[in-house]
Length: 69
Image: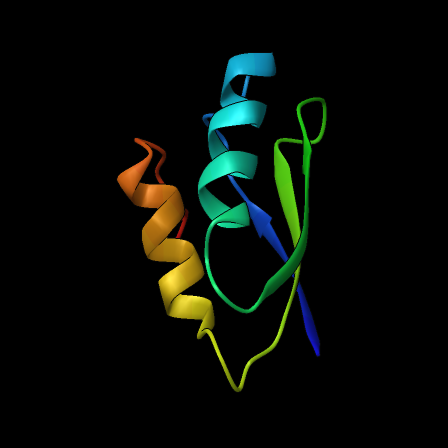
């Protein structure tokens, strides 16, 4: 298992949290997701043998959020 914390500056409310948690929760290989609205961050535990971090990032972007380079 791997863990990642991603900075997502566009997170500002509960809807943002639900949107990201729901989308990532549907990805095979994602074990858990925690979105922090105050910290504007996403903590993800995932199985890197099943899902790549780039797929996780792409899913966040598909929900309408930008990720800093």
